[in-house]
Image (cartoon, rainbow, N blue to C red):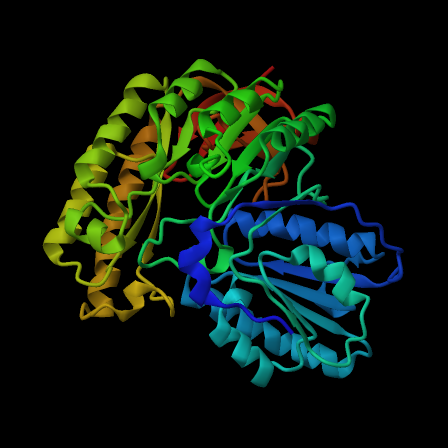
Length: 465
């Protein structure tokens, strides 16, 4: 049994990366059996689930649409907010019932929740019917664990790993657009964030491995790659590389679209802005979390920039990247936030007029400094602030979308609309959702679309043949 040890978090920046290339072959010993995989949380978890899916299918499992048809269930968990844990725990109840009803039914927990010692203790007591627990650093161990005798609970979780795994095979969700992981972990230690403890220190993949992966995707017909990391623009600090150079290298592969998430304002350089401006296949879309408009709150959050520094960076992007769209993250009700602090957040939204924002009420995570801060703002006040913030964000999102009315834009078509089978949907190069009247034949293509209607969260358009 291996358990996470958060006490070594402060040592993570002192270690060198250990690069490991996977080259393992497994027999399909579970042919005829089915798996059900549920993913919670961020894009990194979604991409991790693509690896988990691959590992399961290598062993012979096939996907089940319904959990009742499955022989194994894997829950890839998230630790960012308390409601994510509530969803996992609630779903475990159904899994427990199925385990009682079905012979040899297996339950696997993976992801960020599994890197928290308090949750591991709960699993050992309340959820001792779970068969396997693995962490964010060693999901590649899943095949080995499934091939072992599972008469006893297997907990294999490693914290703050120095390993960088290359050669991971993915069963991707799409044949059009692909996540490409370039960087793991985070060293920023924002006081509200559990990620540095669950994902470990910042460590970068080798540049040549990333470029080869993108070239492979190009050769297999992919139209878009999204470079992925906890803090993508910190890429290369540990291996004497620059994210701007990697971004340029990816742009030169011939992939039709390149984007990246997520950026910390503190690491965003002029060289990055120059490269984005230079290459037309780098999408003019940047997700740049501000979190708060108050310098007092930003300092308490340990964000390491001021409101004015953020605005200066924002202005550079708007001035130097043609037609750039910028979205953000904002936390409402952080401990100590006054009405005046919140008004400063509204002020920065008015100044920046973001294309969109992910907004949240502060959720304390055990083990982070913010969870120990005095928080005496009533929840009804926080929710009222969130409502006011969302009204303002939605106003500017709609205004930005309305700028595209009657214009012709290029859209990468990804699939059939869930709400209307007579429509397909896709995204502009600024990541705006467009619903289009058209046949399935145009899925996977970048097409010209005339925008006919604009809402706060989406656009409608006509295919221009």
